[in-house]
Length: 348
Image 1 (cartoon, rainbow, N blue to C red):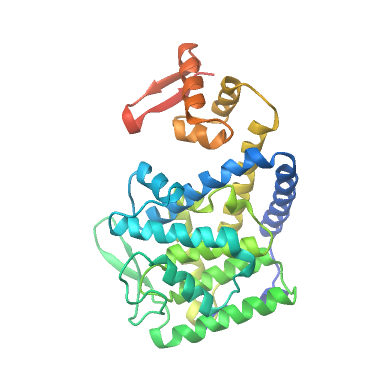
Image 2: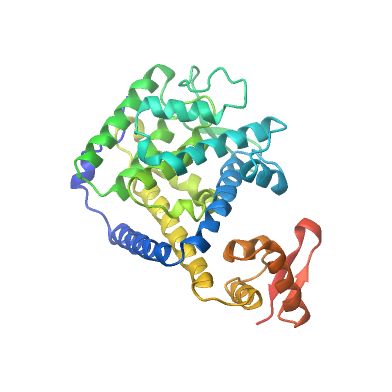
């Protein structure tokens, strides 16, 4: 059984791209802290939007879907799930809420990871909830011709508990001793977790929840306001490509985690940049019309009412709809599609 050698992180030489990404993330985190002090109430509304997006996107990556209306009801109103997909979505919602509210009291250990997995399946009769896998799992890819091919074989079930213990111990040691920059350790931990693939089901979703937990515990709170899961879902091919590259040689202790480190750092930085864009729209007191007008100027190509709502958390949905109507009348926007497929395009 092999995992990444965390001790090597201390001595590894990092290229200029990784160093620049880390520096930019720290700059974004510093700006976010300042913005939150200046406009705490307006920015609180971003939290609920991010929770909805995170819950929807992380489940959708795994093919677990329901309607946008039901997602909002499940997340905002904590309504009772109606079917298997909604049961899985509700479980994700609950784990995400626990992380938001109690991240600083959740140690990184096998026992706590198992507890989070159990909560993920709270609404289902899953006998393996909160237990490591009891059958060998495989990571496969399906090609355009319909053929499926195994691209990675995770650890065997009997090796899994010890491997989880090891990566948690190594993570806690290296973070506790301040040996390596946390933004380098976090992607390596998540990469190891996905290579171990410790559960029969739910590995991908729990890995994204653990990413948020580790970032929070190290002072990076962007995922509270901007959904990291939604960013991953938008470019999930890049996510899987980076993971596949980093998995090569993992069983022999020869894996190069750099592709996955770069991917995850780039995703985190994109979230901080989004946060800054959204702050710019609440920084100055503007009319609803002008706020929406400025939000549309940030969009290129087609965009939806929901896209504008995310950029304007301080406005009610009725104010946004009213402003969009005025922009249509003035000729600044054009509307296309219908129903759920309605979109808008700017003219200048």
